[in-house]
Length: 633
Image (tube, rainbow, N blue to C red; front, side, top):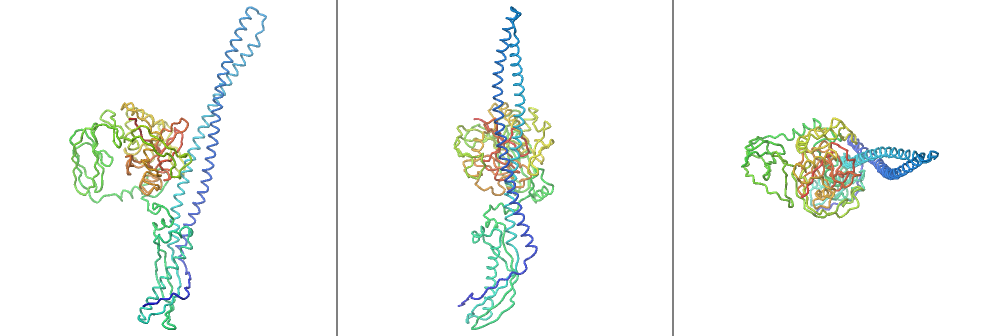
């Protein structure tokens, strides 16, 4: 039986640490500290913008009160002017009978009332101009506030990633230990076995000591210590060299060993230690930029090279009707019979014809494949989960709607992680069922409207559209819904539209279909987006990775551009992209405040929660704001 006594001194001597590793650790620490300082600075700016906004809003409110008072004064002055005129006319009639009568006083009184009324009207005109200017200032501060908020939340994302990199670098440093260990050899074992066992125990001791030292020297040593046991961390021994060894006493074997070691921490383990979501420890498919411009050529090339198939197969589609249309992965391929070569993998196939129920099949193409479909006449209904498309005429259909049934829910910052304008949480009731756009209105949808009406959006009237650059929106007169500053196809969400542009579209839908289309109310929007959940996102409280298209959310479009609609899983109510992609105009129920919901491709995940609401000017347009429609039963 082996009796190992860990009895003698373990001498810990750190050798020279790899200079490159040390420099990397110091650089990572500086990045974290710099980001923390910038967060503190932006927090002050954000708080100041909140105060400035409240001040300007209070001033705007008072100016409107003053304007209302001037208008009331105008009514009074009009009455006084009429009375003065009547009195002067009466005095004039008396003067005709009595030329000696002095009517100067009544004439002066009338002149004074006319001047007062004239001045009042000028004051009203000046006040109207002042109110409009103040409202522009309020709108500008709102945009600044949202930009600062997005920058602040983006910095928090950057901070968490920097913390991961700092921990990863600090942990995976190399070093040298000198340890001494003594074992009382078991006389029943051979000397070689005793020597080998002593060396193993010395290495274990060196590993344990080095692990303790790494954890003690981490920048966040106190917070990660409580999660150390469950993270599965380890160290690797690079080399181990015995520099002294000797037998003494009664079969005691001692040795001194130099051990070169290196920390062995993976990024997912770093996330566990820091108690961060695993998305901070996953590689993103594209480099992060926040310019709002098109995806770089390098990124596009990388994505394309990543998805180039090795094998192509023939996909054949047939149906029992003429004049149908086949969509594969959202793109039209014409009518049946259709044969097309497609790469191996999963493809979404839709066969559409007005008056018939749309056929949808997801094909995992591994060989030549044929779809043969008998399309059936569509019976329109409005029950839970049913899908409806109203006819526009000319064999065209409006946007596909999903029926949302009546119900109640908790509206607002249920999780406690939201903004002030999401509070208090209220119980909101949707009294009647309604239809909600399955997807955001697409470029193709909007193109139909433009072709039918020759409508010109605000952005196209020489006023341009905003894009996000250097943490703030900037206008470019060449950007509009046709050219949003990034590459798009017909199935991308339409952007660069104002609230009035969106309302013009829904009004056209109403006229074309003889149905009551509109924008969803805020209550309807959140009810449908939550889909019976009480979490920040319909799938839970963590954004995860590649679940939606928002800034730092791990998709190939994140921080680069909008994504084609329906690129991610639909929620339990059947809606796509209620989290991220583009902000969506809603009906706020107020003429004073316009609100967008849902987050966007270049806004932080914390701003894509189902309860987040951004208050903006109704004439604001950007390449990260679009809309979806609602329809009454």
